[in-house]
Length: 307
Image (tube, rainbow, N blue to C red; front, side):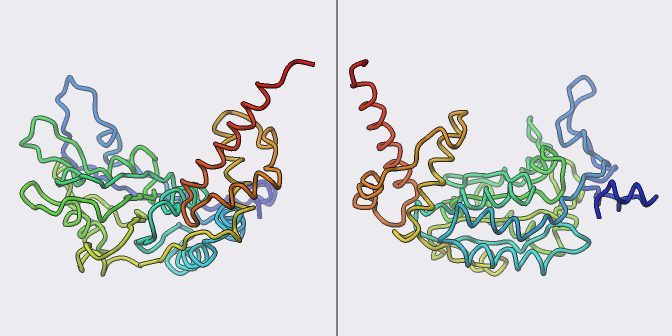
């Protein structure tokens, strides 16, 4: 029943679920004459929780762009169905493992957007300290943990955080380690009151949704893997090529501010050329090939004399 129908029947729609992430007794970091940081503005404030949309529509939309990931899509949506309570979107911490270039990160981001979770992608390559978990007050610049800032920026408590290439984080512990920081955030018990060193208070990260991408899991520590649901992400094949090409053409059109039908579909000879050149499995490589075809079209048009 829609909100309008509820109104006509003198019934109020159910209240939108919300939760206080940063307790009111959190300690502010800014001086009196400094502008407050975004996380400080949300101290004691209730932040909304995204509720479950029509998952059949989510599946259909994802399948149009990721036909090779059908089992991944179904696995994640089934997990959401089991993990979610009171209409609030929730999923198990999920580690997508697959070959480089198969589209793991863009898939995770697209899924987060389709679910309404305001996804935020964080590249892990080269991160070798614990700043992900916020900075201590003894430093001149004090900031809350990255997940806390992401929640406040999205204005929702169950935002989707995507940590890309998690296997490439630094392993030293002299200045802290992101994996060690994550362990407490991913634990169902400690995440309910995870201590933020800047706010100096326990913050509620239990509604956060987590996805990680990795090319392999050999270098990842066992305690981290134990907290994640591992999902193998398949590489696309030539059988998926027509759908993938159409999807990439639409993405290119939208990125250039064009209607999706303003770029003509690939002719059969163009599609054959792409199929013969494409190294199966690389979505990045496929996109480069399609851009090359469009550039060839453009050069051909520009080279024609005016009639």
